Length: 344
Image (cartoon, rainbow, N blue to C red; front, side, top):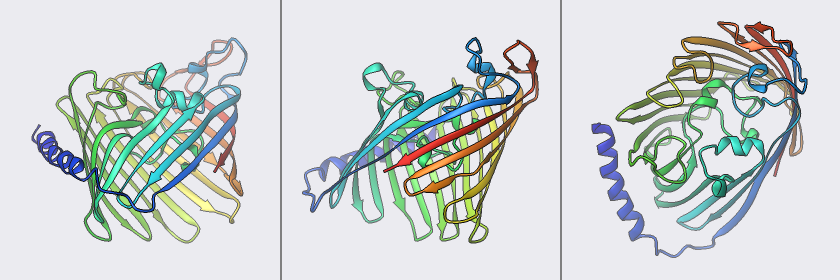
């Protein structure tokens, strides 16, 4: 595609610039360590049980991470960063089931690496990043510290988690930004198995009241477009919206939209709801040419660095896709999650 060829041409120029400035000395470098630990309890309120003979895949939503029965583990996340005057790196390591699911396409020796990249600030308005970085698409992220809801949406679960490649970020003005990238196929973060590449594009608009990002991934046989936006409706109310459409990938043809409405009750307590519609064309997440509507009610309670998240989730399929412990099929499932997330 012309779009991808144009990006690759400019990225070659960018690589040459990156190499030419790699020897520039950094001034007053800083080293930081941050991360999180999360764990949770999950049970079905209807549509299934947590008996030992149950099959998780039919008794839980097929979205990522928070779908195991009983007392379960999330992950330990350790993020190390080194920042100099111009250059730096990030090494983001994950341990536990959530982390393993996030880097599912990595081999055994590398399945703890969530992100691993170096960057160089060519100017105040131009930044180059080379390596493995989490996706710039979508409203939700892998780390539970940055999500309001603990369970994740279908759009996030079946969209890209991470990319490996070269990305250029441009600050066009105090409100507008642009990013372009050349990357391996989605979620192939260790190496490129096909010698094919994906072009990435993001156009961003941001103010003090909120932001909006239009994201595109494109290759010869793959295309995804994604809109992510969020705005403060008042000092207490916040509204986020995510809409996406993907075609031509092993993870399926799908489209969906979700709204995130959140209310800060106090400095300690918040309540919010996520409503998502998701349609799967290839039967990867749910049955082919079927849909699901999922409503998630969450009420995070924060004390210092610890956040407790009680959550009720209602998943309604357009067909009988859930099976309970007695083998009875149904179209709906309600579940309860109590999560603890500690960040440092």
